[in-house]
Length: 315
Image 1: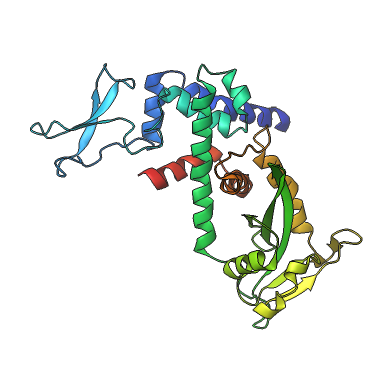
Image 2: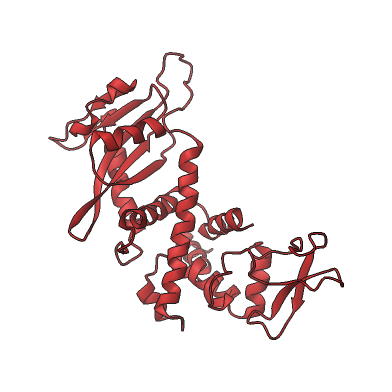
């Protein structure tokens, strides 16, 4: 009889190396991309706008395939990568699939990834950066789709709409400046939303709360002065003094506090947050959103989830 430990180990090995296996050569990589619908299968020809395009062999192309219009009078062709995540990358499809669906998802640093692939650091960094931006876009769209703390009452019309916890954490430093992240944790759904903020004033934090927390919700927070006016906005605000920890029972912020260590671990990508000079706050938000996404789908297949996002924004 195979033990549970042996089964778990086998599953982990299969998960770790399945992508490396399917991307072992160009043919198997393209076949996997077709199965996942990460490359267009039969798009409408952009030239004649009438006929479909199909895959056609072309040994002169790096991918050995191209899209060709089925109308014999229309000579339109497009790259196999047309309108896909891979379109603007010069790396081979094998490398791109491995970088995106293995090294990035496994939180393997760029430095370590370079030791496994012949690709240059700049090329790998570009893939990582675009993946962070893509996932961040998805998380930002989720934020706008509904509010937290609006769970319908159960058997009691007077019950509060929902309960959330809020807090801020110092995420990193950039050019000597502290960079903070504000978080909202929904106790019922366990969802976490993070906002990289320029400061922790009420002028910055209160509008975020009003936009993302449903009216009438109960909000637990520490005694930070910026939260003093939350009650004025129609919320039931409970302050949890952090003199002796983060509270207990219902009067606690343990939920949001426990999220911070998890997000920082999921954000680091084994190297720590790296911020560019151009848009440090925006870059930080992308890193944090990837951590939020990893946490949100920690019990799911991240390969499937990343493929879903790619199809969502590149179809």
